Amino acid sequence: MTVCTIVFKYILMKSRITITIDPKVHELAKKTAKRRDTTVSGLIEGLLREEGAQSRRGLVEKMTGVASLREPSGGKGGKGGRDLLRDALLAKYIR
Image (cartoon, rainbow, N blue to C red; front, side, top):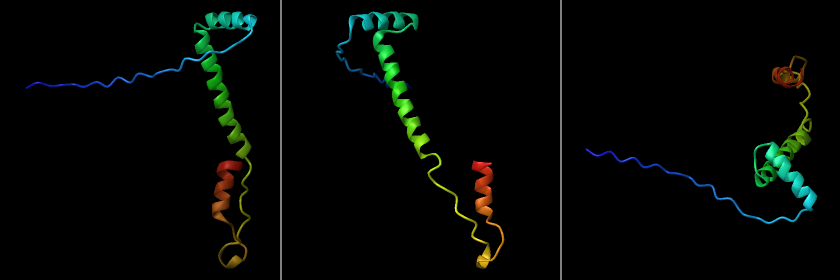
């Protein structure tokens, strides 16, 4: 009996782009990339990924505090009592 194993190898293709920057900035980029043990392309890619991550965090920060908890319903029949769901949410997220 012959056993055949198939291995899929995913190759991530990267795009080649051309950018124009000041020669002094280019030298700074090369020195920074060397110090971080990467390439100028890797340095730029990392910076752009971090910028994207900050943008996503910004959205979450904008949404924080937008919603408010409902006021206590007053229990059954609207007369007194405690709103157990509101109390649980306050305990979990606010206090």
